Amino acid sequence: MMDWSETVLLLRVGTLREADCWVRFFSPTQGMLTAFAFGGRRSRRRFGGCLDPLDRVHFSMAWERRHRYLVLREGALVERFGRMKADLDRLGMASNCLRFVESLCIPPDGAAVVSHALVEALRLLDGERGVSRFFPVLFRAHVIFTMGFAPKLDACGRCGADPGGRPAFSIPKGTVLCRRCAGAERSISPATIALLRSIAQPLPASWATEELPAVVREETWYLVDHFLRWHVDLHAGAYGARC
Image (cartoon, rainbow, N blue to C red; front, top):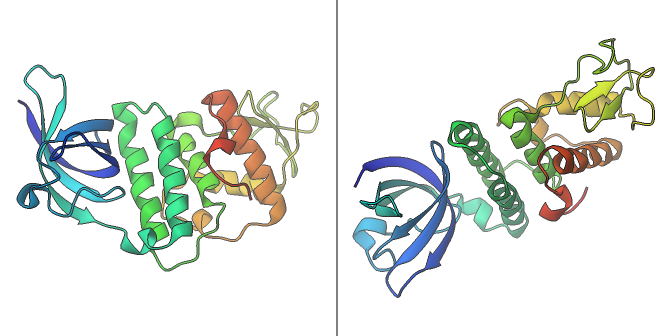
């Protein structure tokens, strides 16, 4: 077996047999993985207190000799996010963010930035600062922007001109359009443009906690929903409440 160890984020844990379990987790080097923890339900020495969903755990692991499955040898708890788990609203937002990441096909070379976003999102939800229920929508946008789907906001995507104070936005092209090129595309406010620019900044960041006007929430919801449908083949509405 080829052994290695790293700190991962647990997403799901299920029972395989009476003493064994399977563990689904997100690795910052490999992305989404599933492994078996043989004896995980009983061994306090190897897995004591570190097989709960939404825990960060440092695992020692190895692929089985024929590379058919991954085996967890032992684990040590790194971070628990206890305050977040005790608050149903925050726990719901965390689950929303995790389900979204699970729905994506994230290659190993993109796993590090997504792992960072996930961990920082959980730290934010575990903290004492207020968090808007709109945060999961912003998180989806942040993740896909960091994966290379960030929209072009500085110039008209058709003619290259300054887009002006209230440009339109083309979902298929992923770019703003000046008034002359807008056609029937929906226009968006300067505040929404500013938010979209800031969302690409890594967490922790002010965009995650600031109060947003209703018009910005509505426009952002529309853009994220349609952007995901067009570019990632996902429906944003499937992952949580609207604004």
